[in-house]
Image (tube, rainbow, N blue to C red; front, side):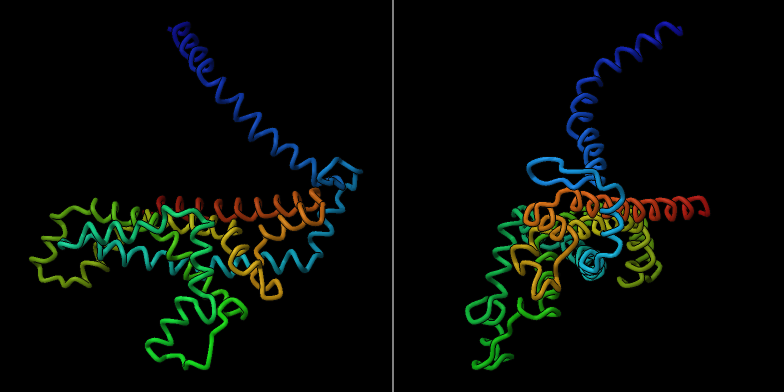
Length: 296
């Protein structure tokens, strides 16, 4: 019996070896080299010299780094709650029985098939002054005088609004599908019983639908936080991190440090700080979820 088990384990290991080899070469080894880079002055050409903990000391005293982390945090705060609320609302609309149900589902999901570059350039056009869609619409409905233009991408607060709206439009489709799937798993018997007891639509939503959506909401919130902290390309295309670097996220600073300032060692140091931040956030959510599960 023991020999059969050992034979099965060896056979399983043989099947796993190709994956483990590829994973080790293209994932584990680059991570190890990345940690090594943080202790060196490292350019695009070669490793220059050992600097010890200097990159870490410099990072903790670098105001640009903390400003970029704060900008990424602002983006998380703006997009995560609004993404969850919007995805739930769209899922509720698409889940209601209607002749337009299939149309709703297609329209709500369609933007998510676009690449980040296409979505960003569309957003850039939409929020342009003079001939952009938003300003043209505001002129058309006479909310904005003809002699005035709103420069959405040249003012910090307006830039954050524009970036948030573009991101919501482009990425809500994926979360919408997750919520729609979760809503369809709610037993019809429970909803029908609640209606027979006189429950209103709002009561059904707050007492039945929302509790059933809690597990998927936790997952979506964590995924959204992580993806928002890693935001780069849409901000880089739309605002370039401006005005005056007021919307520059940490990933853009890492890119500029590594490839424009030719300092890969310092860029790697910032990358691993971001990795630690995301790891801590994931651990916090894991322990909170486990504790709630244990108490239940």
